[in-house]
Image (cartoon, rainbow, N blue to C red; front, side, top):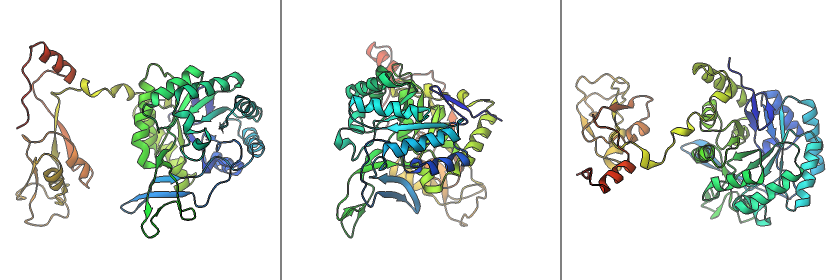
Length: 436
């Protein structure tokens, strides 16, 4: 069985799964429940000057009956005093010495940062996460994403923290920025030990069409909030990989954003994260989801012959390249398994109206015996010479592995767009004919 223990920026944890800073990490009671369920760490809900929250606070983006594909909140940092939070951090740190209890902090002045940093260490926190990402409420006060969006300010605040820090410091980055690596580099210049990303994305998830006010509804008004959940995972993966591949960042990464299964976790690890934080999935399904996540990740590592989590970290990051370096002569096309085809013809409709008209409808003939097909109803057939390998048919097909993409040998040497441009400029190659 693979060893799931992690050593993240000097912080030891029995596994890479941490409860992210947010509603599930608001109290000692929740921290105890999380560790009893099997989580490796808890990043406390952000501590700062106590605030007053509004009611209501959450809204969601639902898709085809699936709840909370995207989740929006306008809740702010902890509404409890630093004294209460730090007392409960100490309680958890003392009771669970083998686990990672991380204090998330947000404040303003140099003196206040020094004070909270020292008090967090005195309370027994194994590390500190600086909240430079909250996109609502706190940014209007010059904190949260207002810091994360300004690399110079972020660097200064990190340097203030490092003056007082005696435990590892993680900087939580905002995705509401043109280039997240600029903020990641600033964190490194300021002396941070690690980064975490992504925080939530500015959003409005829905409008109540009777009241004509977006949700969440607050006395006839609303506000933009922070978007998270499964829908943000592609954005988070992109930003994690960008930071992992940037030579000027070179910091351990705690991955956040839409993680809810072991597969999500493995993808974040493969793109460069070395610890994982989960919030929305816990709010939806509870702390017990970590059991499947740990078991699934362990089984996956075993299947790949990997003995530790660290062996997976960053394995896929180098395969992400700029478009100009992709092989123009590589070709793949769609192939249909007719024993699985149900004859819905959604692939035909998608290709005909939304792609490259590379699928025809033909008589079934002897093309397999897929389940649910209607006798005499035409079924799809790939027009191989027209197929550009766009993948759309395989993506819309409702049957797993019914349509797969297969490599086609072209007999041509690898040629990237960058090489093509250089050779064309030198007169060593003819222009590639335009598609008729």
